Length: 277
Ligand code: ATR
Image 1 (cartoon, rainbow, N blue to C red):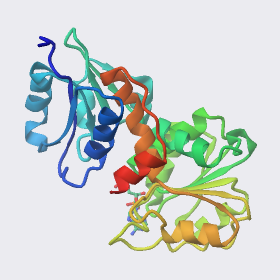
Image 2 (tube, rainbow, N blue to C red; image 1 turned 180 degrees about the vertical axis):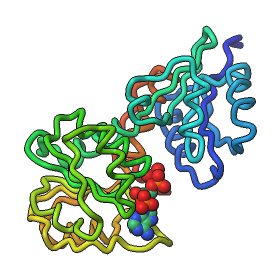
Image 3 (tube, helix red, strand yellow; image 1 turned 90 degrees about the vertical axis):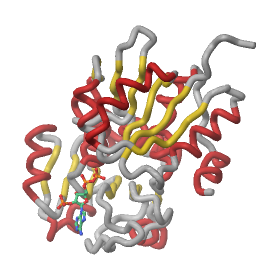
């Protein structure tokens, strides 16, 4: 019998029951024949530090971090990646054998990899991108877009000062557009991204007039419940390339899996089916 312990990983959040990560990582573990486990961990904020400090001692090699802990975990890490610092949040922790905790944010990677999969022709440098929303998800998207060389990012948010704050932080490539005029920013956009929760099951629809969008525009919704949001349906019906948000979830998981279990996982249709259940 091997004396080596079985590597454990998981996702820490509150609530956590809805998380698709256990199914996703569980599928990869099975596919690659890795003797490991990935579990959902329901941890309230008050217990976060105690739990995270204990996990490596229990055989955990890393965790994903979700709402509401993405910001607070950064202060528990010994090393925080540049990307996570820029975004201001971490979603992936790695517990090193020497006891150090590394924090990273792979959301931007997930976002770009999903677009590369479903809109391979898109050249980020070819023109402006319009972004709805200025919350946590928007930060990861803006950092990724700027990193990829997008020349101009139009940003519109219901609460305008939050968009202004992102412009102040991320620079002159970000142009703030008032929420009531958000439809105007679509005309010149090569790609459009919804980072708000509008369109999600149980939430309101995105009410921005979409008729300015040109045929061929790439339209990506980070919302993936439902898979086809009203925004994506409109895009599809009007000659645009609709990219759903599930791929971002799948791709953001890959770097953690690779670091913890030593295997680069593949994101494919089979994984999509498994995660959708
Ligand atoms: P996340 O981390 O998923 O980005 P968040 O930080 O709570 O979540 O951000 C939610 C985003 O959805 C914000 O841009 C929010 O706009 P406000 O900054 O004005 O709150 C946007 N959003 C949520 N509900 C909205 C609504 N009913 N109308 C317009 N925007 C909405």
